[in-house]
Amino acid sequence: MDLDAKIAELKAAFEKDAATVPAEQLKSRYLGREGRVRDLFVLLKSVPPEQKGAAGQKLNGIKAEFERRVEELGRTKAVAAAAGALDLTLPGRAPEFGRRHPIYSTWDAIGRVFMKLGFDVVYGPEIETEANNFEALNIPLDHPARDGFDTFYVEPPYLVRSHTSPVQIRTLRSRKPPIRVIAPGKVFRPDKPDAGHSPMFHQVEGLLVGPGITFAHLKGVLDLFAKSMWGPATSIRFRPSYFPFTEPSAEVDVSCFICGAKGCPVCKGSGWVEILGSGMVHPRVLENCGIDPEANTGFAFGMGVERIAMLKYGIPDIRRFTENHFAFLKQF
Ligand code: DAH
Image (tube, rainbow, N blue to C red):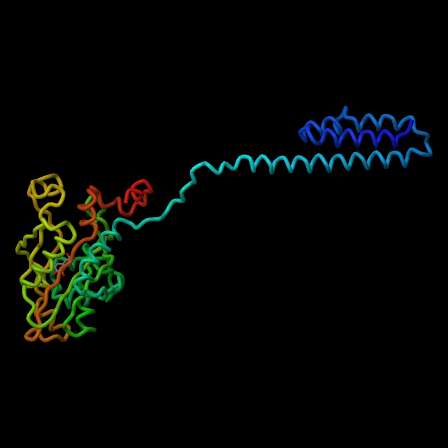
């Protein structure tokens, strides 16, 4: 019996099968417990003892070679299968894009209107002094807003600002009239969270100061603002009000942009929704900042961004803005 001839024969058979037989079958056919390599090992018994060592080595060699070939074939097949799975006609999977939070897109929309009118955007710190947040704004010590329940205090004289109005003070002290700024930012109040209250929310403050500024200018600017935000059919109305830092003061309503002022749940049937507080800057505020109230007058206003966004998108609960629910945020 010629072992070499048998090995050569097996090799030829293996090569032939390798072209058509899947790697797994090839493995069991040649290398399995009843495979063809094993058949050759059985023949080893009849090899004369002095030749056994060399014959065994040859058989181990062929076994190792088949193992390597089977593994190689398996790998090539896997790559080919993966290539076959790549269907170039399938539609692509679109990546998820991030988007602007509804508060910031509302903030942007407000900012765009005033920037077109030449207002600069200025920012103030969220930690303020009691003096800037209250005193300089003519909010006396005994004013109810000074009560600990309405303001987060840090350590005297610092507090967390309860409105963006202190940015008026910073601006009046650092710029000379004519002054034309809006100041967007976060404000904080220790209110119990509910559908209409959040301990943090956003405001946009406005301030315009110069010689000869009148209430008519305030009306004109806010009317233009409302028409730019909600369309040319929008009108505004002023209701007398009180703020310590303005005199006279007014609350401003816009004709309901949800129902066209016909009456709906948003405007509670009245046709009007309140959007901001405003007024003529109190002479004492100008004086506190070193500006002569005889030479300059001005107006100011402050609006809540959440409120405007809620009205714009029909969002019934202010807490939605800070919950980070993906399904909610994806709508905008
Ligand atoms: N600071 C006021 C608030 O937080 C809003 C406000 C009212 C701002 C009248 C103003 C203003 O500038 O003139 O409720």
